[in-house]
Amino acid sequence: LPRVSFNYLGRFEAAPSTKASNSGQSRRWYLTDGIVGDELAEKACVGDVITVNGLCMKGQIRFNITSRLNSDRTVQLANSFKSKLEDIIRDCFSIKPLIEIDYSNDFEHPFVILNANANNILFVLPPGGGGAESYFNNIVPHLSAYKLVLFNNYYANLKVKNLEKGLSFETLACLYVKYIKLIQSNGPYNLLGWSFGGVLSFEISRQLNNGGDEIANLFMIDSCFNLEKAAAEIHGIREMGIVDEISYSYLPYIGNEAFGLNIVNMNVNIVLFKANKLDNAYRSNAELELLKHYTDTAFNYLDTIVNHKYIQVIEMHDESHSSWISNKEQIANICNYLVRVLK
Image 1: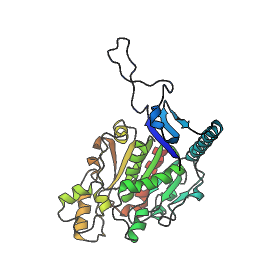
Image 2: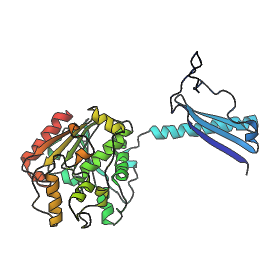
Image 3: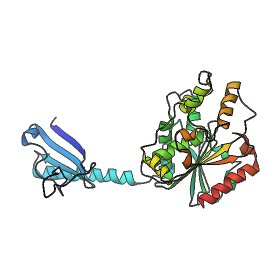
Image 4: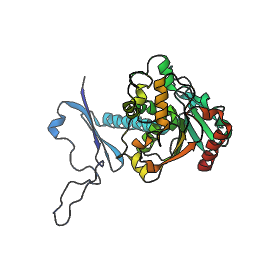
């Protein structure tokens, strides 16, 4: 077969360049307005029938094709190459209809959309023990003015099949981000999650914001963070198996990230609805001790990730981690706040 060489040389504008000063004191490399000189030494192309070099410069992707074919064949190749690139670009920028999404057998129904004609969207992430249905009889009836995207629980699906080992919140969030971007291609985004869903909402917000999208509001209902710290303070919790590895291992450092900087600059509204009462139902004394530990904290250890100055805590008075879903007054309080903020 004839030898074909293809090289992508990267983004030449990824780092700032400095033009030479008149004095010559700070002479460094700088970008020109076009290709200057040969990209490869002539002897480097020996043996190659076709050589393609690509690079990004000044916001444009550029390709140089060197060919030992005749002129007509070379032009035909260049035009075909350009046409295929344009097809790829168009495909990347097109939004596929939701019915065309390949959900895979592991996640057949990833979300439910309610109030589809509303303009303002709220993405709602599931608690650890449930899916979209977890919100049907509490917040959903109060938020009919908003397009609600209620996600089901992919992690729970995997757990039933004993396939959750090694899964992290970072990996899980990537899956949900894909669906979120198909429904709403650009920010600002509004996200809400209860318990496990709040932690997942936090990581989704982090990934979206670090990717350049604006996060307007992040609402978490009694979500618990830094299980590693809690486990260290309550002897034997991890060994007894009441803490999932995915929760135990999640402790992101956001200080130098865009997400962290936007929080500090008050560009992200972070709200924690916090329970101040223990649940009556618990599986073991160890679980009761863990619940009590978080109930006694001011921020559910979210302040070990985000400075407490940027967290708005709204107390759910006389409510536990699970009891709020049965208290109409508390549900109304949460939803009234959401309506005021989302507008």
